[in-house]
Image (tube, rainbow, N blue to C red; front, side, top):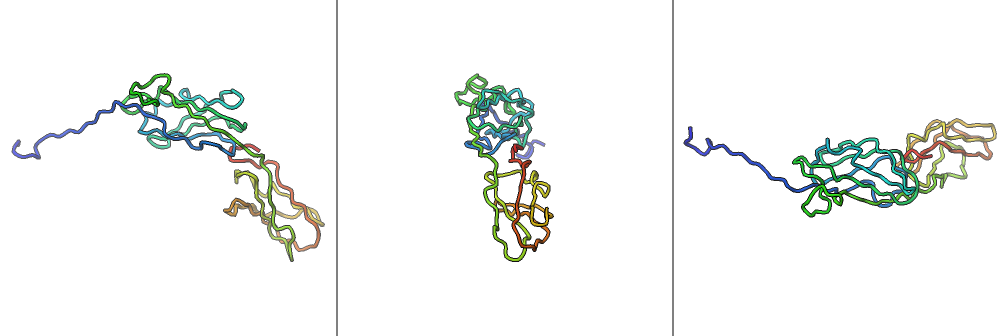
Length: 219
């Protein structure tokens, strides 16, 4: 004992006196749909117990502050903030902190002045919702040689695929309502409405909706 380097005790420790910062938000910028959550990222692991709904303030274009339902860790440094669905067009302000700490107990130091936990260390980010009305902008084909098996449609904005099914479609022709068998995404932003094969000549009317929603759940 005590005769070799292997008998030495080695202990490595680190000193962390730097407060964390918010470094990312998703989605951000101009958002084309309604939203019901935002994901935020910090520059280091966060003590999840210090980041709760009371640390978040969201203000919408009407000056209202929607209820924050939950803050859920996605990883050591990423969190999902969930709130009542927001769909008003205009500018939003998301304020986080400053009473959120890293695992060493350092509070948020968003301004990087080395004095964490000050009022101006809260993260403040502005983003916008610019949501178009949800409409059908395209349906193809319009003239069908032989038989009708399907119609492809495109919407003005992305939709929640789970909100669009055969029950949301009516095809009316010379002998009444035709059978819609399925609705599936094509992968290029369009949706295929599959029908039982229709061979009778005549004019057919396609009706879609109204209970089809965008990803935020807004019709």
